[in-house]
Image (cartoon, rainbow, N blue to C red; front, top):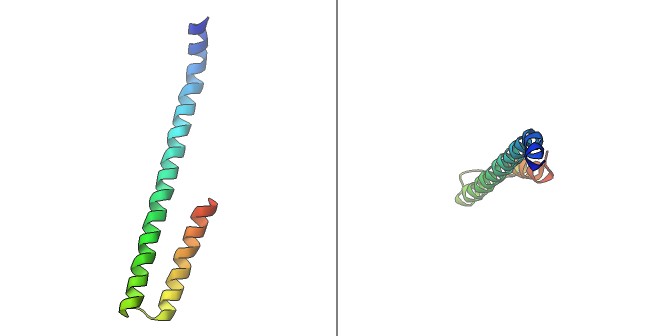
Length: 76
């Protein structure tokens, strides 16, 4: 009886495995994107401190990066 159950459940188990792998890949991609945006924000602050960009440019770019980070956090 257990063999029959295993045979009948194997497609479902395979689907669940794939679903978990896809979810893990999405989570990793989201975390990588978040890390990259934080690095961009750090670089932007350094550019402002060194005088490479103006306050207005900094504000515009910072707003864009923070908007993207907020969307990542909310799951959009």
